[in-house]
Image (cartoon, rainbow, N blue to C red; front, side, top):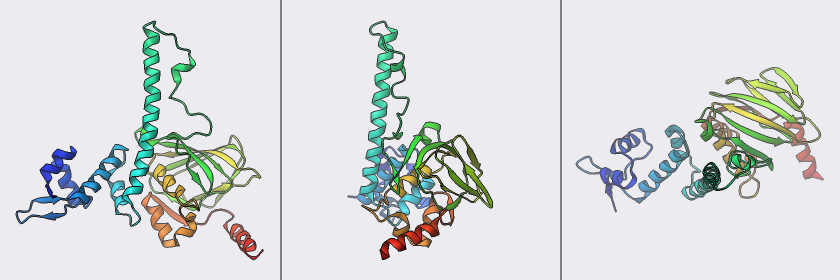
Length: 291
């Protein structure tokens, strides 16, 4: 069944003006145009509109939504399952906060006393937990979101990372980054400058500065990783975490170098080189193959 733009607007709550804008920008084209120039939408377009609305509900900008929907590997079913997980975690957090509100109301009305500790249930995250309960792992190592872009209206996001290695050399077009070492040791290269960070030490990485860092201690390094503004780093880590070697091949095996460059650009970064110690890693893999 085909629907006019006014009918789609009435069904979805999206204004006619917004639907026209989506068409003009290529975000959501109608199924066809009538001889009178009217736009007509069918179920595939309605499903795409639903995706746009879900991503908007999750606080994503239209430009980023267009990049996601236009990606050749985008799958509606996988996206819906991802939306469900995020919304479920938000529901759980909201229920916890509502419970704290109810207890506080009863406390203030003198109906039931609450402890000082109960006043803050739902606000804090216990050790080893993620803001959305997702427990993302990159190369098998936890990358826990502690403060989300949703918490700061996009101003910043913060991760706690446990890493025995590190990511590739890259730069961020629009974000500053800050790394603080809690445990272990990290080596970081800022352009041509080399630093060694021990517990309690940190490094500020301005946007558009190429950098690479990795763990250089015998045990995994535990660091706080902050991005300001938040940009799309949460989405980036979620996507990379899908390349877990089980459901998908690990990241650097799933994509060729051109695909990796395009992937990084989608998230506002420029891929510039391999991780620290990459040559040693490849040599180790080759020895294991020959053993």
